[in-house]
Image (cartoon, rainbow, N blue to C red; front, side, top):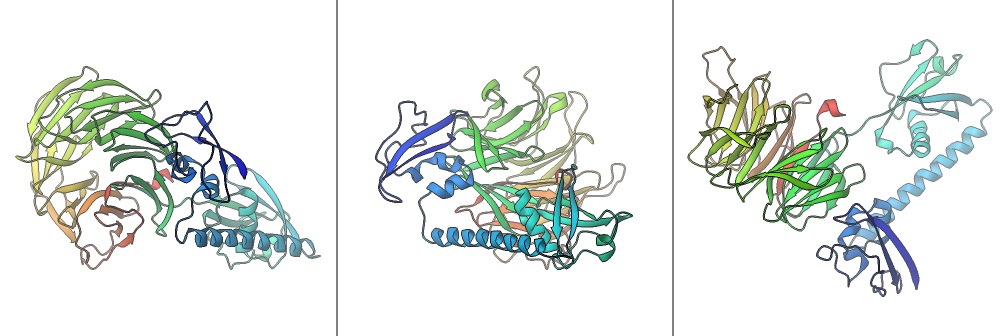
Length: 499
């Protein structure tokens, strides 16, 4: 029998939780139940059972999870393959170090990262950029695919950009008086998705690789909000909890309890550490992200479920849309209603606002999209256009107000791109492209990176990546990402400026 001590963050606490357990064999029964200082959430983590069934394991760093999780069918093979790859890389680095160290013609180069840290390497003159990156990745602890090398000499940069793996360092750099190379870490283009199976997936949309899968909610995830600069995310769920996640380590770092208030929509002011959520209890709640407590609440703000919200934090204004078909503007400082307007006879299902241009778009459960000019006073807004074409619920909207472009997703299985007329023009809004795909399943959420000209949509089956090129010809079949066990409810994409 081996006695082990596991330390990690509990599901709903920021304190360290320590479990003392004893095992029979590698994956035997749990013998000692818990210590007297145990602080597990009794509902989320049952006391009796195998250690790998405790939900808090999903909040542990990956090396600990690999050590204590119960292997599923095929997981032993995956773990063995990862171990073999790691061993191969280590052996290769050792071989390179020995070969370069014994080379009489080897040269020393200085590798500098973008913050000025330096590493000196002795390399052979025939070393490739790939071999150097292998060695640097092992020394710096950076994932190998995220490394790029730019070779430079005394006179400045040599070459047009990062070196390919098979490239060798130019002789003019090695023969110079101060040969060096710059190490650049290029982060992947990431997307975050929330699923009805209660999981949160982190993806590299350039390669389709799943970077992490987070669990902790006891029911479907309904909404999410991401701060890519700090790699923090908020998720609202049907289990009436709002959780905060650390995307660097793929762990839950906090939970806010919201009894009777499953957050259908959520928005956050990360700099001021506050958030707002809307729910089927027809209320809006303001949250303090530091304390995890609700600081104020607007009850009965609509006659139906609050499905979407858009925030203007500097002015403390909130625009909400609900199943009653109403759009309502709220002053959160005074907790007062400023104006209300009937957007549709059915529900408002999605909402996007450009506050600088006072432009709002509201998607409806009937398939139309209303374009509104927001007032600067307490007067009602003006509807300036209606976009028609979708046959079912408009589940997602993205707006590039300066470029007058809109992308929408719908339960009818299509994505549409629209062009809005100029503010002073008498022209009408028009649909410029319709994207169908061979699977035909409903598109349930949408995120767009306008600078990279791509969109990510979630559906009842999978996550899909679309490139803007070729939309007019309707010939594109999107790249599909699988991994969740149920449909996708919400998605966010990391913008180019955050990388």
